[in-house]
Length: 110
Image (cartoon, rainbow, N blue to C red; front, side, top):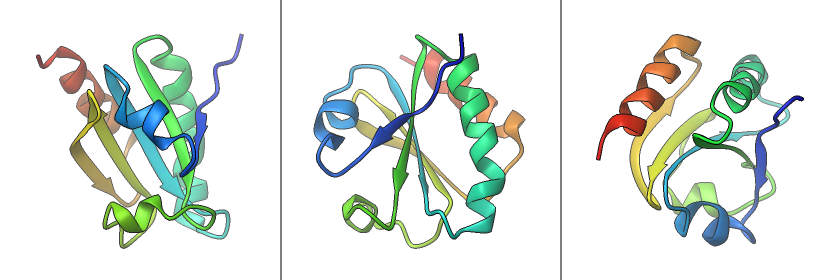
C-alpha cells in the first residue's frame, strides 16, 4: 500500500497542523517551481517511510495565503512542526538524508 502526503489548505491548516499533537512536515510548493518538482518525489518517499510517525503534508503556495502568513519568501520551503509549533525550516532542495536526519531528531526530542 502506498502512503501519500496530505494536501493542506488554509481551510484545514488549524486541524491538520496547528492542533496536531506530534511531528508534522509541510512542503510549501507551486506547480511551476522546478526545484519544487525535484523535491516532490522525495517528500512522497518520506510519506511512505514515516507513515504513522510523521504527518507529511504539501501546501500549494499559489492557492493558499498561509505561506505569506508564515513569512515564506521562497519555495520550496519545508517546515517542521512539533505539537503545532514550528521548530525548523528548510529552504531549497536538500538531500533526502538531510530531511531524514531532521525528522528523526524531532521524533526523538521531547
